[in-house]
Image (cartoon, rainbow, N blue to C red):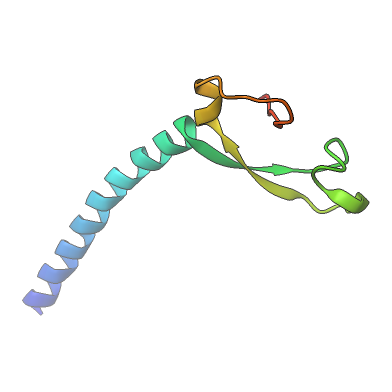
Length: 80
């Protein structure tokens, strides 16, 4: 019984240690490098949501290119 409690404490300690490392890394990645967004409606047709469907498309927004001013003609830019 004592051994099971010791393993449970180690498991919880390892979980929280990983959690407190993973959350800041994930937030920094989503803020600085890229994030996922959903495009809904007809405003971006025919590039996104082709064929007049009402479903939404999922896109990856690349923050890194914008920070380096690597935007070219034909790129889709999202403003928040």
